Every structure is written in C-alpha cells, then in structure tokens.
Image 1 (cartoon, rainbow, N blue to C red):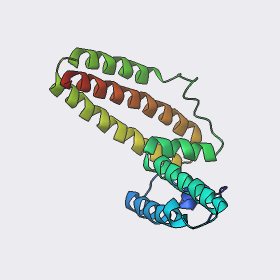
Image 2 (spheres, one colour; image 1 turned 135 degrees about the vertical axis):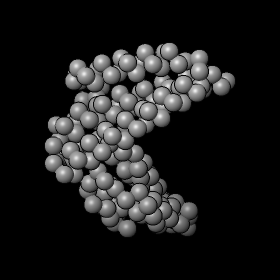
Image 3 (cartoon, rainbow, N blue to C red; image 1 turned 90 degrees about the vertical axis):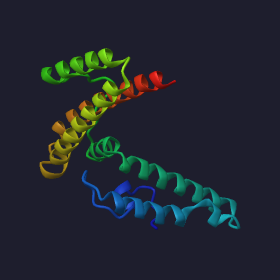
Image 4 (cartoon, helix red, strand yellow; image 1 turned 60 degrees about the vertical axis):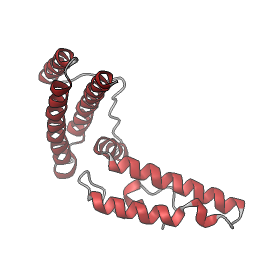
Length: 175
C-alpha cells in the first residue's frame, strides 16, 4: 500500500476517479488496505510506526466512507476539481424542484400517523434519489459538467434531509 497522504481516495484504493464505482471492488480494496494498515499489525513496532499505522488506518476508513456514499463521493469528486457545492449557504434551486420539495413535505406531514404511508413515501423518495444519482453520474463521468453536478449534489442533500425526516417520523410511530 502506498503511504502517500497526498494521494486522492481513488488512488488509495486503485480505483478510477469516477462517480460510477464498482462497489464490490471498493469493498475488496478497503478490506485489503485496512488489513495492511491495521494498528494491531504494528503492536511490536516503535511509537512512531504505531502512530503512522493509526493515521493510515484512519485515512483508509475515511476514504472508504467517502467513496461508499454516492453523495459524499460526488462531493469529493467536485472538491478534487476545485468546485465547492456551497450546500450550507447556496439554497437556490430550480422552481420546479422547490415545488416538489414543498409537495414532499406536505405528503410527509399528511402521513405522519401512518407507518405504511411513510414507508411508501420512503420507497418513492429512494426511487427519485436513484434517478438523481443517474443524472449525477452522467454529469460527472460523461459530460464533466461540474456546475450541473454541484446543483445535483445540492438536490440530493435536500432529498437526504427528506429521507431523514421520513425515518424520524417512522421511528416516532414505532417507539
């Protein structure tokens, strides 16, 4: 394993720098890298080697968690290209998307007392998320349209918040 802390997460696992990722390949690369840098392998080593192994293990796990999540992977790809998604301070969205968000929130409010209705909303939401992820793959991998990709990341962030809201509502009903 390369111990260069300046290499990107894709290089760390020997993967191409793309949004579309081989999940099984990522898992296998992570397991191999994690085993190689696991701190237990350095128990008899010097303190400096132990610290280095711990830092490498932390980096391997951070890289894995980043690349495993489609939203985090897209953010990371954009970051590598010098694009800030501005999710915290740029909430401008196309009007049709904002209307859809309002409709989602109303549907969630209407379904708050019904687990089946909330689960149905969750399935619909996940289907829309998959569609947005497919658009994101096209924007990043096929067209290299970083501006469109940044907007799609912000849209996916909104959808992630809706998913959390639905999950919280289901959890409240099941408690």
